[in-house]
Length: 339
Ligand code: FUB
Image (cartoon, rainbow, N blue to C red; front, side, top):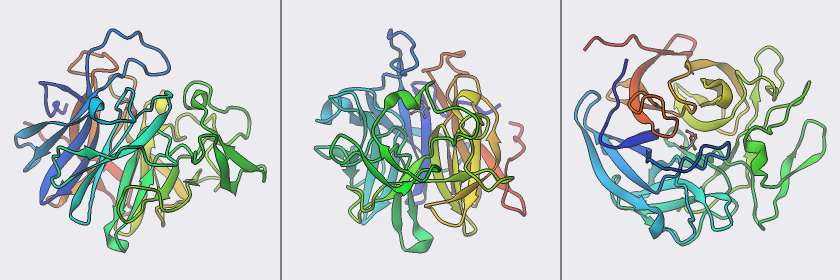
């Protein structure tokens, strides 16, 4: 069993990146709350971010302290959830979701000269963004374009806009923010496709969306069609992550109520991706959320569970496991080393 990377605070939703030859982890900072549990996730009441770093896996972990707090971000009302980070143009960018003053989850960005922050937030959220779980992928092997995955849709005027792709029924879909669809009231029924994650390209300064938001198709290998909404063991729910291995793009995610970390592969960051399998079985706790990174010649899965809090869903701890790829590019957990 892997151990929590840190135990002096609760941490979750780890986004790991190698910056300046060092491994940096951008987690959520879970905290105790007396807010009643509900399907809206109100008990996940996080208020700031800490950045962690390691010179080597299994080495000491440094907590760099508070990198950004809710009070310092004008547009945030509450709930600073799963962040991600990226570097471009010599600067470091922290992407984070939080509820705005009307209660809608938006994605914000904050900038620093250092990977550990502190980060200075932009005045407003990224226009056209609404979602939890931003995942930023900089395609360094293909021109350095940056993609923001995880968007639920585009909401330029606050009322929703038409997607530039038709739905399976051939009709244009109106991507209006509807939080009920992100919880237990997802679509369901025979032949009904699952909700797709979305991706957009970021502008060169990383502060806005450069393209419209497109649906990322995740296809069933046996049909070549979209995964179905009732296929809860395979369909996308939350926690997207994009990475590239040997020229193939990997889109990995949580299946939500079935608690798997699953992945799909494709030949473009825009998709389509074809479902390949599971990376991690359910952990202790309702949520599962991860990142995948190459560091010092090996590949690692960063994830969380609730072992330290003995099963309290919103008090999680970040852990790491080595992963390996087989000859077909399938992902497997490496055998755990004996301490
Ligand atoms: O940390 C709050 C939420 O829990 C994240 O946004 C989800 O991915 C889940 O891990």
